[in-house]
Amino acid sequence: MSVSGVAIAIALMLIVTGVALGLSSQTTVGGDSVDYWITPEAGSTSTMVVSTEGPQFGAVHATTERLTRNEEVAYATPVLMHAMEMHTPGGEDESKYIIVIGVVAQSDVEVAGLSAGPLTPGDPYYANGSYNGTWTEEAVVSPAAAELLGATNGTSLIPTRGAQGNQTLTVSSIGSEDVSTGMGQLPVILVHLSEIQQLTGATDGDQADQILVDTNSRNVKSELADVYPRSTVMARSGLTAKSMSSGLPLAMSVAALCVAVIVGTLFVGTTMGLEITADQQQYALLGALGLPWRSRAVVVLVQALTVTIVGGIFGLGLGYLGIEVTNHLAQEYIAPTAIAVAHPMLGVYGVGVAILIGLLAAPYLLWLTKRTSILDQLNT
Image (cartoon, rainbow, N blue to C red; front, side, top):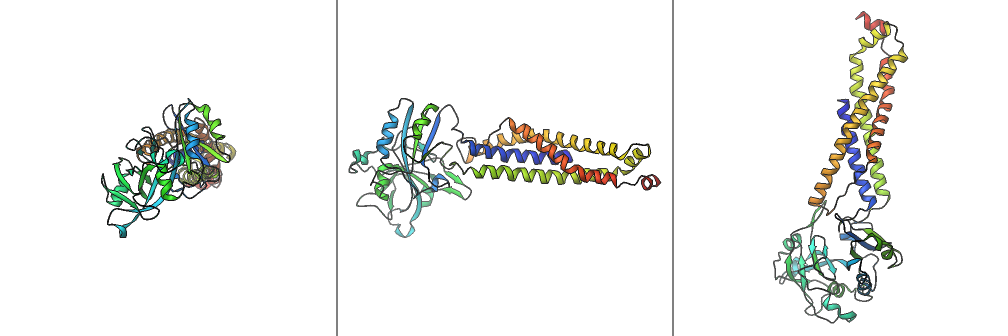
């Protein structure tokens, strides 16, 4: 029981610590490609999906064109996100808020689980900055947004505010994936960047929230850091997994450590304390045979450390397995890449915490041994 208690406590601690390491390390998307987000330095630390109305970049079309000329960059696209109120024809009284995301369309661009492949390549309405080109109306809609609006292919989507004349959207395609959060599925629509700029008033200065860069080389990261002053370049781990504040992973790790130590110590103290109480006659017999209390205390201490170390070793196996399961579930339901890191040093960390649990539980166990009366136990 003591071994199981320590193993479970260590395993849970390693899983949480692995997730914290994943958040702080900003790992790249799975595979050999390295995708980067360039974001304003003072941007929100909330999820990227709802990180709207914050600091924005300007002249984004020209900037991404310059980045794309780099042979090591497959493509670069600005990303503008805005929560917009929309309705279908005749449904003015049933308007719904939708997250609308604008990109410069290419077949390889995928944001929030939606592919820009169904959109006309490029950004026709931008027209070299004149914003009087072809209004495509095209929109790729997530299943959650389609269900919320009651839309199907060909359905018109009318912005409640901001649209001028025939500046509406039409469902070109319904995606197969949703953006999931702890509160359910987010309704998302993918459109051309210039069209959402027109609808939201972001044409002045050619604004966008972030810039997505797809590359097979890590060497471009330093160049990306110089694109805009006071910007942050981070590896892309999915639209909903923006880099957390550096204090959050540390807080998660410390909390996991405290819980593991407290639970493990109480569990070992309780279960081994019951065992020592049940074996009081044996300890009394050792004392009667001339074994001093110090020697009996060493026996108890070695026993406690052995049990916790064995529990820690089992906990390592459970912890690494738990990290694999966590990453599998995360990639299956909420993120395109692993969110937890199985660092080799976690093994040393786990065994060290197991030893600490044994040392913390030892004083109580030694006290139980010392209070054993040799005479009383032998008389019984």
